[in-house]
Length: 463
Image (cartoon, rainbow, N blue to C red; front, top):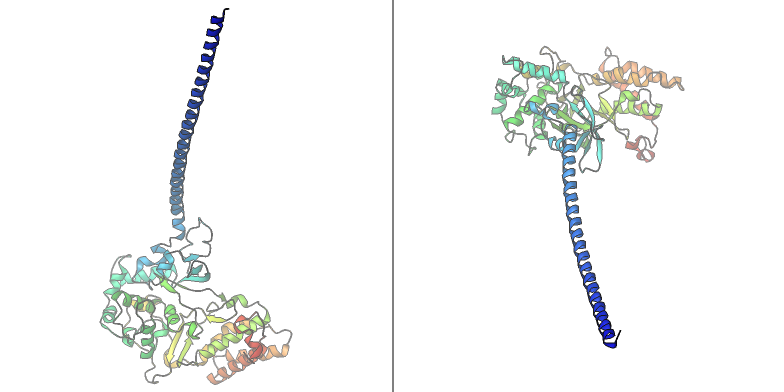
């Protein structure tokens, strides 16, 4: 190979090397661009997938939420029929309906999901109530009448107007002579409540009737003795409640916060009311001796306050039962059922305090037999309350409970026998009840268990 040939070979090899390097450079650049494009493509694809996943998650969550609402709806939806709202305005009121439907009142077993409404035939239900969605209070949802009694009352209303078994009970009640008088009246008077079956209205004074209107919590702007701010709906609800069961009315007239031995009235919705939950005294028949003594003393103390109070009203028991009283966790005793409590105004002239008679109508028969006869007001003695308490309640609490002290048991038995004997004079009954109350007071213990009077009992003698 000559020199010229070597030169050409070297030249072309150099050119080829540069071409290869240039080609490799181009390839590397293209590869980087491709990788970058591919990376960008993948990034966009990932974003799209994430968006799709998020959308899918939202749709899935919405679907699950819808499914949960559908599932929970029968749990927290009380329903108009269950509450009796479908019967309004032949009902108690609607002051608490908002809390029912906002789930601020729940049945006790509604702490877990998937539970349905309890049986509608029950008269009372344990529940929980909140005002701030954080702190819950144990309460009782109760009907003024059993389901059977409500159906019977509705049937009486329909048949009173010669209607079929079912009818518009509100329209029938609105058309009655009594309700037309209510519509024309500005003030609640005795003739408007005559022949209603409740002991509360057996011999009402104008002072008591004015208090009913002034304290009625199911209307706005309460406080006036006149009913001018009452709508037709308000008047019908008040008349219906007075005719069926005056328990919620008594709770509104004499609230526990003012020192009365009655429960707080939270409000109503349809034909149910809500009150605080207590433990009935029948649960304490087998309790410790110190608890029994304290409850027995409170029973007599409450009964004594019903005839001696600042407002000068005499509250009397038309009947009594062991589910009528209950205690809170602090040990304080309250009257939990006021449906059989009557009131006589001791400030009225004796000539006025007499039974208000009148023609009976459908309102007279909603809660009882139209032929029901109550004790005339003039024959009600202040000893009547103590006779019932000693005979029907204290005998169960105190009999054979002081076995360690036979002499003390003998004293208690003697006082019990005297205050439960309705053949004795009222003076003997009242004295025996007072002696028994003083004896029980001396036996009470000052213990942290009785929170309602501890530690005050350590520093105040006889507290």
